[in-house]
Length: 272
Ligand SMILES: NC(=O)c1ccc[n+]([C@@H]2O[C@H](COP(=O)([O-])OP(=O)(O)OC[C@H]3O[C@@H](n4cnc5c(N)ncnc54)[C@H](OP(=O)(O)O)[C@@H]3O)[C@@H](O)[C@H]2O)c1
Image (cartoon, rainbow, N blue to C red):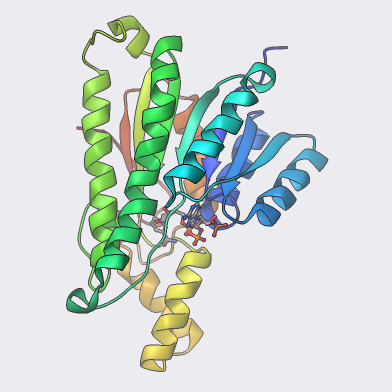
């Protein structure tokens, strides 16, 4: 039997990341579930192992370079037994709303750390091994907020635009032969970006709670408000995002940017 490929999923303690971990475990990856809440990732890893899958948990705080360095060191130590990370799923993220002129420096910095610099550090650490092996998948869960603007979330939009821009450049660059890797080695590495509109997850539940508090709307009204912002008029299911990630991890097509707006079919476009 071929050894399992190892997939690192950040933000796997709940929401979209937990669904991605479940989906990749079903496709026989060894899934490393990473987040700050080790209790939650350990519980999910145990649930996956009980169902016959291979999974482990890892603590990481993406806002802290030291924590990222220790997580990478643990991954390296496990490499002899579990193999290298062949799929990196940069999913963890934060979204805190505030009016444009009342958004603090601290909030902008934190969004950039978790949503942009954290994923960037993981890419910088894991991409060289992928290029050397001539195969690897990096799937970044950005957002429609990385493509368009939304009111009251300037820090979130800025961080997601930064992630999308960085990935566009990375995908373009691995298509060009470099001193570090030949063209054929690079040919097996892909950098994909997934841009969901509003997804039914704990992050959205927080936004619903904030909207109810601010406007006095009921939970149902607040939920309908967010669904109506999506072009399809429906929320995206986290399992649909997970399905797209599984496709991107196993596919051989060129690097893609994928938009999910709640309609049954996501829109795949070559990233440029
Ligand atoms: N929900 C939406 O409407 C929506 C739409 C488009 C894109 N997205 C993106 O999809 C991704 C997942 O979102 P979600 O809806 O599943 O959010 P969520 O339910 O709030 O989950 C966020 C995940 O990120 C982790 N995380 C947060 N801060 C972290 C940090 N400093 N270090 C490491 N992990 C951290 C959390 O784990 P711990 O708290 O345990 O660390 C959690 O597992 C995010 O990047 C989000 O921006 C969401």
